[in-house]
Length: 450
Image (tube, rainbow, N blue to C red):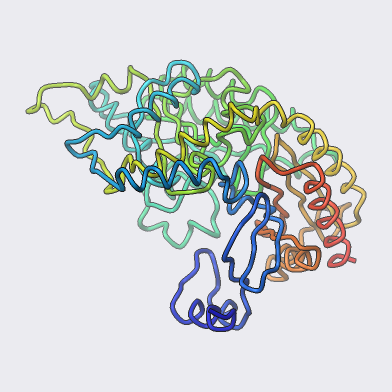
C-alpha cells in the first residue's frame, strides 16, 4: 500500500500517545514498515537511525535473527496460556534466568505486560505486604520530583511531572515527594556540582522519611537516572544511600528499572552498579529487546512469604493480567538473554560509553547547550535560551521538537523530552553509527539554535 494511503488511515483512525493530534493530523508522519540493526525503514524505503531505541526498548537491533527464530518457533508451539491455574514452560524458564542475573536476594517473579503495570504491581504489593505484617498504618509512599513511573493511577500518584500528572490529581492518592538532584541546580555554580546536589536531596529525603516514618510503606526510585523527567543522573552513592535510609526507617525500597535495566547503564541492572538489592524491582522495555510487551516485578522471599497463608485468610495477592507470562514474549526474552551472553554485549559497552561521554562533553561548547548528562548508554543535551543565566526556552517554542525534526535531514529519528534531546540508541549500535548519531545531533542543535 502506498505511503499516502497509510498516512491517511493513521490520521483518520489512530490516536497516538503523548501527541497533540490536531498537529499530527496536519503533518505527514513517517510510516515505519521495517527495521534492520539500528535502523528503521519507512514506507518509501528511507532508512532512519533509531536514536531512541524505539522508546528505550531496543537492545540488540531491529529484526535480530536469533530472536526472530525464537518467536517463530514458539508461535508454532503455543501462542498463549493463562497463568490463572496453569504454568507454562517459557515463563518458568525465564523466571529462573531473571532471578539468576538479578541483584542477590530477589527471588520471585510476578509477570505483567508493561512498565506501568510492573510498577502498579510493586506499589500494591508493598501496600498489602504491610497489612499482612500487622502494620496497616504503613500506607504512604515517598517518591521524587521529576519522577515518572507510568500512567496508571498508582504510578501517577508517585509520579512527579506536573505536565503529565496534574490534570489527574483528583484521582490520585497523596504521596510524599522528595526533591531530585535536579531540583537544586539553580543553587549551584555554572558547572553543576552533582555531589552537593545529591547530598542536598538526600538530606531532605531523610527529613521527610523521619517525619513520616511510622506510616511509610516504601520509597520509589528510578535508580541512577530519572528518565522521562529529563534524563537526570544521580551522583555516585545516591542509590546506596536510599537503600540505607529505607533500612533505617523500616520501609521497602521499590526500584523502577523499567528504562534503565538490561544493560542500559553499563551493568545488567542499575542497582547492581552500587551493590544494592531493592525489596521490589520493576522491569520491562528491554526485557524482550523491544520485541513484545512483557514486564516483571521481582521481589524478595521475605515479601513473598508475607502473602502465604490459608485460603480463608485472604492473603492472596489479588492482582493479575490476561497476558501475564505470555509464552511468546517470554521466548523472546530468553533469546535476548542468550544474546547478551553469546555476543558479550556488556563487554562491548565501555568503548561506546566512553565515546558517548566524550562527544557529549564536546557539545558543552555549543552556545545554547545548558547542560549535558550521561550514564552508560544514556545521554541528554539540555537546550537553554541563555547559558549564563540558564534561562530556558519557553516550552511553547518547541525547540526540542524542532531539533529532532532537523535531525531527520541527517537520517536520524529522535524524540525529545521538552527541550532535552535524548540519546538512547540500541545497545548494539556500532561505533560508526554512534558517530553518525552524535554528528547529526550536534549539527541539528546548531542549525536550530543558531
